[in-house]
Length: 318
Image 1 (cartoon, rainbow, N blue to C red):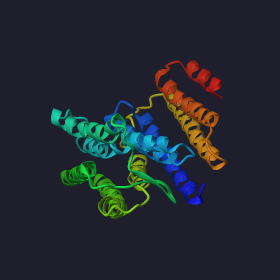
Image 2: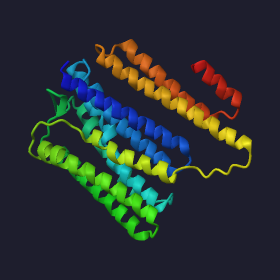
Image 3: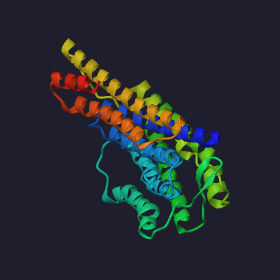
Image 4: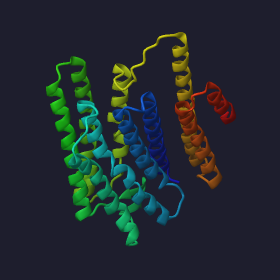
């Protein structure tokens, strides 16, 4: 396989791993909080998007590559509406929104799925992709679907920045204003990197170019992770009243860390198998089992009340 295809595929799989781990980490901080759940879903959408773009470059049939490209809409077709919802939740909290808001956010994702996945599959169509020196990449056509997607991206981008602007005007807290500035700058950076290539060159001028948006989205994602770690604003409010409470907190941190290690190993093995001659069925099963063990740690950590149950799972998994 050409070195450029291998290099790009490894990048896709690596950022997929990062999105996965960041989403799981933030969800584990406080799964009851809406912003944490939205950040998790957003990152899993990015993870699925990057994973699909990476897997379609494997030594699989052309038909399967087209199918994987179509199904990737479950990632890129939901991400931008979720970013808008996430920012709005950070600004206004967990207030109940009117019905039109949910139709606007979730309805657009449903329309994307129908237009770019359900209809092509139903009508026996294929994805608009060609194999280049960098692997499979999109070939844009100025039809209704392309115009609609450009409008979708533009509308939710504007709505996101409008929310950031009002959030900045509504608060006098300097630390919050700093977060808003940093987050806005990261989103603008993605726009600067993406619009000239994927929107103007690829979609409007119909010139074949590698799709890198899912890779550049690591910028705002890592920015948000940095802000969460620095200001701890998505952390649960825990009051330590005894050493037992401290032990409980440290134990849950340990299980969360072990879960992240399993998830990382699953992606790492996936990439190594790909580098060393391709991904076979049993290799994929092995990576999936390791991934499932990591997810199992997260579930047991949250649902099992008895310490013995948690350590039994830890021992059996090991």
